[in-house]
Length: 352
Image 1: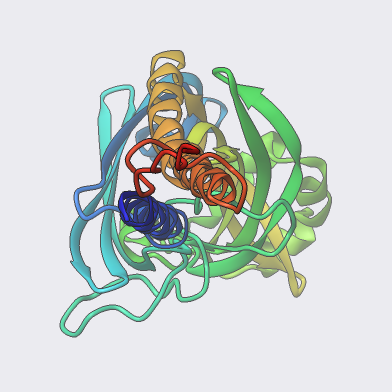
Image 2 (image 1 turned 180 degrees about the vertical axis):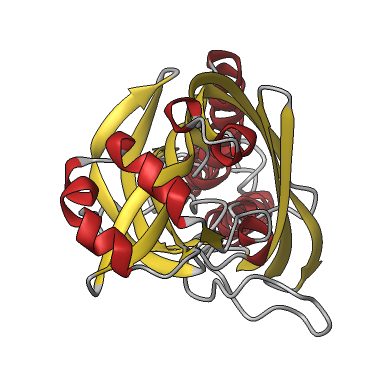
C-alpha cells in the first residue's frame, strides 16, 4: 500500500506544479505587463533650440530676431497618479530650459494599463482627448508594424505611427518608430504667449530672412494687399523617433525635432513665415543607460514569470510522473516488489 500512497502524493504534487506553471504563464505574467500603480519615470534630454526674440522683432532688428544654437535641456516626468481598474491616469510633465527661460507644461492622460492607448477617463477627471492613441508610452512586446496611432497634445491631433525597423540600444533589442506631425496648433497654453497678428512693416522687414517659397509669394503687391496688422496662425511640425525596448515597451532612446511655425494667408494660400520656436533634442547618454538598466531588470522579471519558472515547474512535474510510471511498471507480475511495498514472502515447504 505504501507504493500506492506515494504515487498518489507524487501525482498530486505534479498536478499542483503544472497548475502553478499555468497560473504564472497565463495570469501572473500578463498582469505583470500592466502599467503599475506606482509607475514613475523621469527622463532627461539635451539639444539645441532656435527661439524668436520678441524684443528684437518689435524693435525692427529682423536680422537678429531669430536666435539659433541655444543650448536646451528638457526634464520629463511621467507618473501614474491613480488607477481605476484597467485604467490609469497619467501625468506627463515636461520642463524645457532654453537659455534663461523655463517653459513648463503638464498634460493628463487616461490610458489602458495593458495597451497604453488612450481611453475614457474616470468621472470628474479632465484628460486629453487621446482615446485609441498612444501618448506617453508604448506597450510591452509592441507590434512591429504601422498599427498604432499617436496623439499630439500641441496640435490636439492623432497621427499614424510608422514602424521603421529594429536596432539595438544599451544592449537591448529595440523597435524603431517614427511619428510625423504637421497640423495647426490648438493647445491654448502654447497659443497664449504667441502674437495673433504682426505689423505689416515688421513682416516686410522679415521677408529677406524667409524661405524661397515665402519670398516668392510676398511680393510688394501681395504685401500691400494684406491687412495691417497681418493675422497669424501657427502650425506645429514635429518628428519623433522612438527606440522602444522590444520586451518591456520602455523608450530607451528618443529624438525629437519640434517646430512651431508662424503662418499667414497670401493670395488665398497658407504661407509659412518663420519658426517662433524650434527644438531639437534627444535622450542624454546618462538617461539612456538608466533606461536600459530598467528595461533589463523588468525584462528579466518577465522572462522568469512567463518562461523560465513555468518551464522548470513543468519539467519537475513531468519527472514526478515518470517516477510514478516507473514504479507502476516495477509492480507488474513477475517483477520483484520494492522493499516495504509487497507482502513478505514465505519459504517454500521442505520435503520430508
